[in-house]
Length: 311
Image (spheres, rainbow, N blue to C red):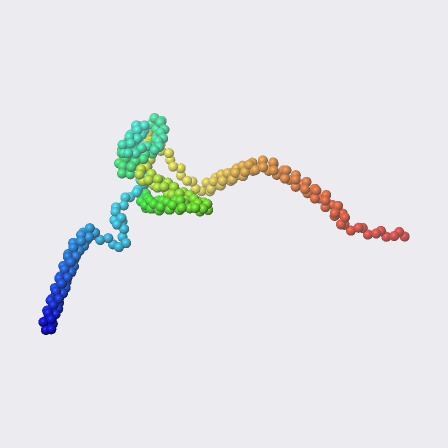
């Protein structure tokens, strides 16, 4: 009995030792796995920080990165210049060559040849970056007498039209998608009406964009060439005073009277062809009405009193 008890105690001790050894091994392997995962996670997080641009300048919350991009200004330049030259035709040909060499063209031209009194008016379209050079070259063709330059910044309008175009195109696409899903006649009719309205707005915006592109892509120079003895037309001065007011009032009165007589002449055929028959019909109806009312009025009148007996 003692031997069996002793064996049982020894077996229990051995089993406990084995269990303790197994538990220690599991804990060690768990620690090694956690440390390994931490070591693997560290380079991974570092790689993620590198890929996300660590060290780059931070962007403020709510700030659009596109705002930092440079804005291209859209400026429309317009210039007028008057130059007195010895040969108007030769100067006009040189201006055409200047316009073509700068990437532009002549959009309008008027010449009046009269020896030394010759004149010419030329409208030149050139790229904005060549505007100043071409204008200076034109002034160097002769004696410059007048120059005027103006510019208009259309950047805000260009950006606004671009944004509205994008939104309108997206709106049209949404309506087209709804039209493709419509099943009833009423839905199709309503959606087609809305689609037509939005497409019209889109076409209007596209036309506006084309106009802005024409204004900003090419600048305009209006050139007046004068011969050696050509006279510049004087700008008439506005007169003031009593007689000027009287003359203006008389012209207004005669113009109004002429307009009134013209209107009367226009209406006269209608009055003759329509008004006269209407008057005749009204007169006939009145005669008929008078004839009908006369007997009834006589019948309704009281009879005369009886005559007194003779003496």
